[in-house]
Amino acid sequence: MARGWAQRAPHQVAMREKDFGIWREYTWDETWNTVLDAAHGLLAIGVDVGDRVSIHSEDRPEWVILDLAAVAVRGITVGLYPTNPAAEVEYLLTDCGATVHLAEDQEQVDKVLGVEPAALGALQTIVYLEPRGLRTYDDDRLMSWEDFLELGRRHRGDHAGAVEQRMDTAEPGDVMTLVYTSGTTGPPKGAMLTNANATFAMQTIVGLPERIPDGTPPNPSDYIVTYLPLCHVAERVFSTWHMAAFGAVLNFAESIETITANLREIQPTLFFAVPRIWEKLHAGVLIRANDATWVKQKFLRFGLRLAQRVGRDKVANGGNHTTASRLRYMIGYPLVLRALKERIGLRRCRYAASGAAPIAPEVLEFFIGIGVPVFELYGMTENSAVATANFPGRMKLGTVGEPYPGIGLRLDPETGEIQTKHAGTFAGYWGKPDKTAETMTEDGWLMTGDVGEWVGGDSDATDEAARRGTHIKIIDRIKHIIITSGGKNVSPSEIENSLKISPYVKEAMVVGDGRKYLVALIGIEYDSVGDWALRKNIPYTTYRDLAEKPEVVELMQDVVDRTNTKFSSVEQVKKFRMIPKELDHEDGELTATQKLKRSAMEDLFGPLVDSMYT
Image (tube, rainbow, N blue to C red; front, side, top):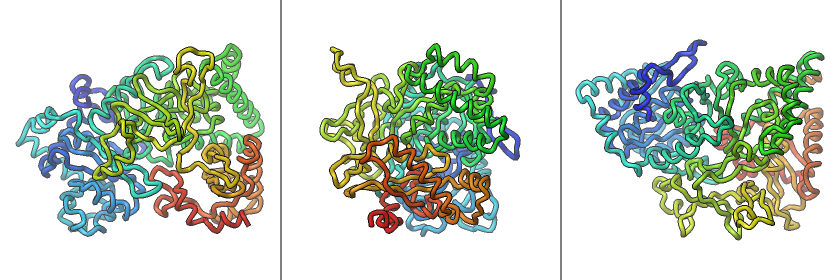
């Protein structure tokens, strides 16, 4: 697909990267030529069909180039999260048996060189991108990116057409990438996705025009921003696969920390974000309202109330305007809503999606209310991120939508587990046939591990599907559902998401399995609580000092009290404690995708939890 764009539109922009404050553009001709150089470099090193090529880097053009190059020579791309600590890097490289490894800088190179070479027997070459600090290293496996491309250019001159010949032998069943799961309950597993899986995902998700409100498929006039790790399947779908399949321009954010500023510069037309990012953008508006002058506060708070009202009316109408909501929006847009969209960075956005975790309905209502069409969807690595989505005019808030056309989806009659079956189902876990078997039913359906229920059914309908329901609501992960000592089943994620609506709450974990009542561990959003403390003239020194301030504990009590009004008595949080540190992937409390590792949290903060039951 990328080759086709280079042939049809060589001078069209494929990628944009900010370099020393200036946006640099890469045309399709330039991009594809670099891909060919990199692919020839892999051939020169000796990469054969099925060999693994691992990438350990932040999002940048070289990530995409090597990914496309590896697939071109029928290799298998293996992405590592930039935050993977040394022990996980050793495990992942050993597990996949990488032949070539791309490391971004000295820090990532050191993680590989710290592993005994014998443990990485297949690893022949370590290509690095940033030379700073590496000039005195003398490991024979090290090679700079520039030298790697030069090796490829020489090979290309001597073996013209070799990459194209390898490409032409590709099969639909070729494994193109290993996507390692986040490993909340054990070591990560490498899900094998094939060319056929990727093609199916592109056709079903990317190439389905009816998912976009204006009905126009993605095209070269669209701007996409990539900022989540490219080793995550959802980011691959919404960035590189959009680019390769439809020629959308891929813009690289400087980092996930700068995404809010980069959004304002880029103003993407298509945007995917996990709930944490949507919450961060929403919290930014709330904080700005608190910090504004009296006059601006009035305007912003008017805009927030208006957006919530418009959003609530629209989602109640399937995502379409009612007469009243359209009138309110027309009044509010020139006054404040247009400025809000511009400030957030989504003024031009014609389609946005939220996935990978549940999101609070109030957050979605806000964005829909200011005119950003956000649709919640659902999928997982093992089904190529293809399962369900909300569609324009058929949105149901609190659900992850309806199955895509042609998708098999059912609920286990005993457990309520969601199961899917389609051409995007993965080829299994790398080197772990036993784990693969545990994930599939005897009749070939993928077990997602998520409990769901059908909603939107009509009891009077004659059609079984219409009577059953059209949309899926995710209850929780099977393993996360709490059963209290009184026998009540409780979904902790719904309560946690409600707590995280507050701009002051970053993390929340509800506990109560086998206990008489529910309790919570709460982690503050350091920046927003720090801003609040500054306005209240409350001095503090560290994260822990701030989190344990009596005034902050009282602030969190207000958040808990407001949240409890939304739930029945048995689902209410009776006590809470402040998490005394910022959670971190390297410390083992979070997965690489920033999800809480509940077992690790319970081990680490067990005494804190027990103190709430004594």
